Image (cartoon, one colour):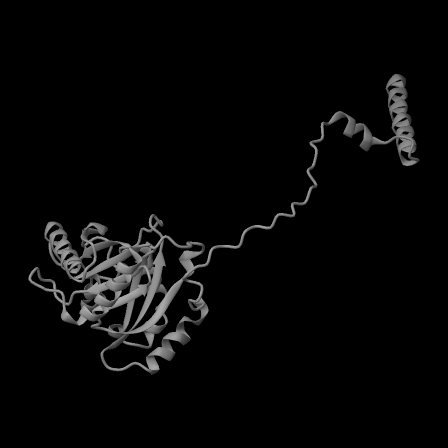
Length: 271
């Protein structure tokens, strides 16, 4: 027992002495630890090179999301019979989506219109989802949309200087390109011809027939627009004509207005 007491007393005295020397600054534990641990050098150089500004986006003037209800109300107050308010949301190809409305753009527009649908009839509110295909800035694309007032039966829509939509009123293979689009299409053809652009013309349909019939109908629509452009002097070898049939809809197929928007030809201008 005496030996145990002596050992404990020695340990206590040794610890107290060590603390006394440390407290008085005679022992530096920090420097001892630093000598044992390899410290990685820190690069404290501050780069003076500024990041390049982001490329301009054709979406930059779109309205902020928190004002969607006010914009719809403002446009609705000026709406005339036969006009509709469209909410158009853009989405990126390959953007993940598992919903029921064909693409995330359509779903995004439906979500943005949720409050307005409580106040206005669905026949005057049209959701649209457009795939971003113009090769421009995609930064934050999932937050961007347009709200526009349109004639529900408009046959021609210029989205921007690289994209034009032509709509077909009827789901029929005998349907011909309307003469109502001749003047604007001819004017644009003259511009494309002068700028020596390449055109990609793609035909689409709604989903009211089987896939094969819709593919062929989409191709016939695309060829009818191609022929009109070629007749106006645009070189045929600078046009690519395609069909997507019922694929890639831009609106819901559960309403007549949505099916009307899906029966279309898209003209992409490769500058």
